[in-house]
Length: 288
Ligand code: R5P
Image (tube, rainbow, N blue to C red; front, side, top):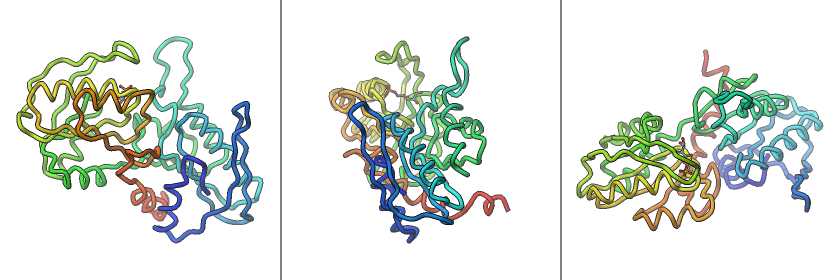
């Protein structure tokens, strides 16, 4: 069952699994409230609701679709949330803050028996769910795309993103490194200059999220100054706030590449296969 932000992925998943797609009517009221209506009878069916979490209002559409499925008497409902919103606030960093990721996880778990998501900002977010949550990795699709482009070095923009970059580099036999990042504000990032072995090399910077593009642009500048011959900016989730893409191009990026967890013209890496495979291998079977 597709939400607006899940339509393209649903079509790919339908092809992979052979499962039918339910008809859904949806609209946004002038005041911003969402409306959905499931037009396919679902009584007794196992359904999968696919809706991404960006813009964050899409979370409402996901919840409405899940609740509509329950109203329609489904046997069980699974949620596929390719980009999980509110995952950055996975704990109370300061007194008085909520654990926003738990609020989102609780809301989804009210109506879904299971949640599948892709590359959570922090893996620990999956433990905040009261229903099983699987956090799928997009290592294979990135390794294939980077390999096809002759990438020689995979660079993480900070230490936290290194494990993902290392997994992709290992899969394709490339080198890996990371930069030291310090975020000053949402619009300002400082990176410690670090001598990298990138002279004349084709480099891919890989992060989980490209939001304003400030992190990536700062990394691109470092690589360009150190003589990289080609810089590819890759992210799992491309939010592209404001003029993020222009910022990356102005910094010297040769290409911008993200997955289809949030559909855009830069979504040239698909997570359909990893999601499809996971849907066809239920969590219970994986544990056996
Ligand atoms: C932060 O920890 C994330 O992994 C990304 O590095 C961050 O969200 C990117 O944001 P921006 O594109 O605004 O620099």
